[in-house]
Image (tube, rainbow, N blue to C red; front, side):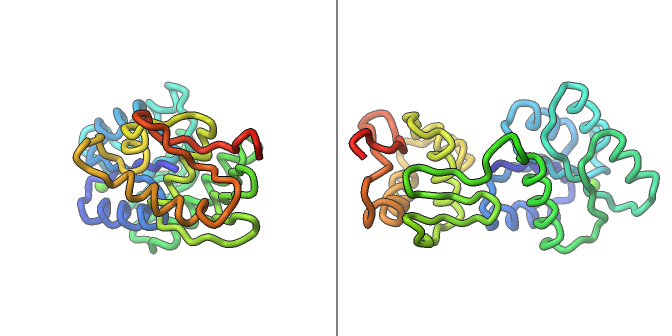
Length: 227
Ligand code: CA
């Protein structure tokens, strides 16, 4: 799942980005309101972490513009000001939750997970499946044939993408931008290496094989017809 952080304080932003990345999310960061709004509109984010006091547009203006444009992704506000009217204003504008700085990262992570669960309820599955492979988005757990499989954050994100787009051949450039947040560079074999590790964990000891390389095109996860 993809999260956008809009935060002008460098240290706080970097700290959040690192923590959320380690928790398995793909994270982008914007340092002011204009950039934040632009990314929020053009990127495909599941959730926004939005600071209130920002240069350019403030957090409220960003949120207001997003909601007016029909963007419904959950928004978690960060505010340094513990005033009732601030919270009320944020919630009235369509924020889903807020945290008062300073906060513990574990608290932020708990709120983020709650918002994602709420946002998905009824509309989208939180467990992705193919044959006997299961990926639980909220518990961050993968099993195959009932056996627990330990994945790194990147492997998890990679498998999530493959499962969400099951049956579709995904080009390396798309995988690079969705999982590594980078533009595809033909010199790097980072995707191949991660894919090999992932297949080693979820496919090598099982039948049928679910992940396939489509030469010259990319990768696909699908349950073979003969299965
Ligand atoms: Ca700020």
